[in-house]
Length: 177
Image (cartoon, rainbow, N blue to C red; front, side):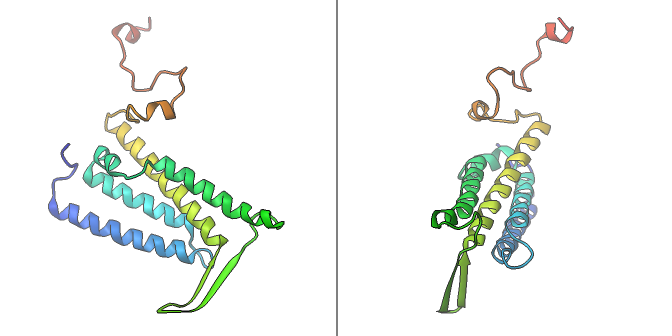
């Protein structure tokens, strides 16, 4: 399939913007459990960077290039966030109790603080970014006249008792019969 935009300059620029937005997104994710930011805003930034990529490359190509289906990764994010909250319960502490690990004298960094809030934020980041990517792809495919879901996705997202929205309208259905 041909790219959505045929401009080499625009494709290159969007690739650079995609990289820069995701660097800022990771920065916000990593600082968010101690300062403003975190998994939610980082995930939204990553999701919006995929919006730019899809506008330039085309939605079917973007969906084909994704290494993991977005909703599988979003499910992993939910499990990761829930596990970070439930882990302290195994030690008899309340849900979402924070555990921290501090390493001192780490080369080049000096001091590293890791804890369950970061794991929770990573789970939220995966959930928000992947749900955003999936919603953008579904909406963009629908507005482009393509089916919202690929044939392989239909069994996962639709009920067996319903007809897909994109089914062909027969002439007798147009008349109301």
